[in-house]
Length: 260
Image (cartoon, rainbow, N blue to C red; front, side, top):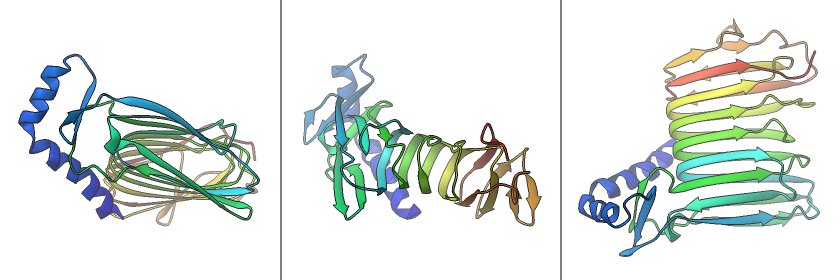
């Protein structure tokens, strides 16, 4: 899966490197804009759309967010299952929102259009997703980001599990909620930096393996090859974190959380 993410980011980088003249013309035409876009020979300005998915009768949900490059922000507070605001530079980056329900469980999938072969972009604000999810419905969340920055503020969610895949860039995962159940977290990385914020008063066990550059965990102690906090083995629920891959730096931070 990491190879597939790297191919997505690398493919866009190759397209940009091979079209220097096109990029220069784009910048000349829209001087002062933060981003410009060419798709099938037509310049397209960044646009924003809002989209929501109602909750309906589902009792749980699986959510999959897949972005090749850009900025991904995920947090709680949705009135339905999902409220999203998406900014993208042209049709080739337009997110596709698909939802299906089976019994009590719903499946939400958000990814980009697959028409990026003739797509050229410049600037840093061309692709940004702000996704709010429901706080009360149990959610299994899977995010994939090929390159860019992510901020996953998940403390208010009723999170069952989390799977994060990152290719290159920086990410923050905030799990400092008052969890009344075990939560399984898996982080797979390419390069960059990942900061995982965890509740101080809830048991945490973190397993770090693979080509990790460095691990900063000042509030944790080593238990064999793992990192555990003082509340581990004493709290009613546990967050199990597994980090693997070539992440450059991992920061494990304790903050807030319930009292044991």
